[in-house]
Image (cartoon, rainbow, N blue to C red):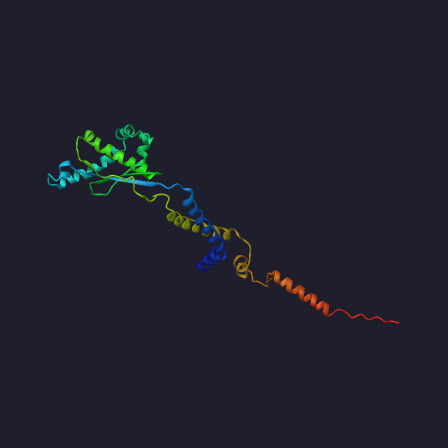
Length: 252
């Protein structure tokens, strides 16, 4: 069966309340879960810069070759940070975190912007203060260990994560969750509407008779409403009462 645009709009209009109900319930559920049931997650981050210590102090003129070399080293440093050599020392020096080296490797995220000498370390946790303490610890240990590992002193900490900062949760994002729920539920609801229409093989109109049976329609029986029955019954009672025979009797 081929449908044109008007047929699609007719199907949607026919089941619009079902579609609206599904979308509303989904959006409300997403909002309630996001605001009241999902534990907020906070992120703290630090920045490290990769350059020579002399350049850092302004004693030498920075040349493009050393800058390019430092940029290429960032990819190596990203892998070095997430190794047991660094994380084992963090675990030893900061036992109060209660985390293993493997857990720290999973928590620490390392990123950098292309063609820059800046590297960002980020840690997410249910407590922002703990996330800040962890990322600061990892950054300091990496800064102290990289000269021993690479035999170069070209990493310095640009800024630490502030533990007393009033952060905003990075997860969940209620507005994003509601928007996603709106789009997904709308697609699902429209799909259900078309599926129900596809499964409905009853004939309801003259167009259906012509379309499916290719036969002319001789007559139609309209569907009566309950109000029609009530009105017809009242009219019948009044009519019957008006035509009731008058009976007289003879009295002696």
